Length: 181
Image (cartoon, rainbow, N blue to C red; front, side, top):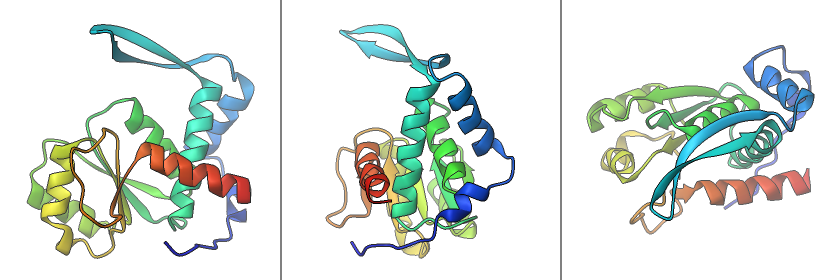
């Protein structure tokens, strides 16, 4: 993949918005409880707690990953998923990268999903699972602006190109970007 060189200094001058309020909250109460979400451990359901610092670190890393993929101010990034912890992180990361979120209900059919993402000219889409990925791949030719799909859940299969990545892959890109900038 080609190196993308973007001037990200605009991030230091963002007006008060949800991204700025989130980052302010992280700074003011880093060890406070930010989120809880259910997860399965040893076959049992448990609640996992996340501090503002932990959430802030993930959001910052994902935002840096989006910027490293070429997201520019006000470009649209889609989220095709049910509401879940990763959805919140993705939405905050999009805002912290200066992008704009376009949402797609997970129950939306493939044709309408492609229309929504294509009409918004989404550059990247966060997809929840194989079902959402299949809708995007089925209509990939109708989405010329789309350069990458980031999966919340591990996909069972992906195309042979680098069109699909995981959240861990996005985080690795973000960590590299942050280390370099």
